[in-house]
Length: 191
Image (cartoon, rainbow, N blue to C red; front, side, top):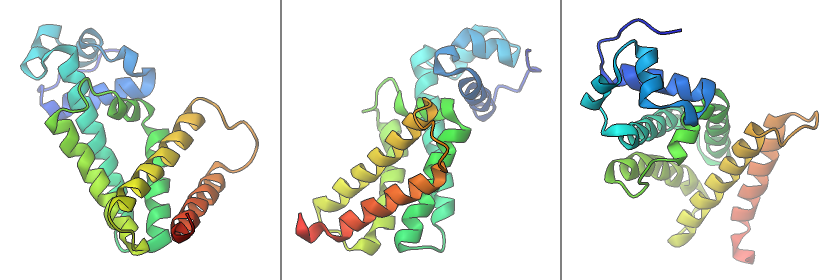
């Protein structure tokens, strides 16, 4: 079902592209499908994107900004393990609610692009700030951020692909895994 014509503001276009991604997967986010949803002709989209790679780049940045906003909101007023649990739950929740947009954050055509890097760096910086309560120093901080992201992405990816079929509460599983990860960081002197 085609949507009514919009004023072609970039934010509205990206919102529709994100809805397409969430409903049907990133493979269905094409200029033709997006134009159909917007009730416009595909060439009109070239005013906003440099083809499909440009659309994917902007959708990746849009998704990274959405993810950052949700993580930052949950980190307000909390610290330590509560902050880590809060951003972890927000991350997984975001991937659950926005599976296509989450996928878009992982598949920018050029992950080395400056704009994509800046959007991702905000999430890294937030993670570093949240982990400061654990008195990590030097490179260990970045190792911890990478570890946390790996746990969260792995959990989200397995869940999205139906990898957790047992009737155990997934949020409880996530909390146990994050707490175990944090205990590991606290015991880092024993590495």
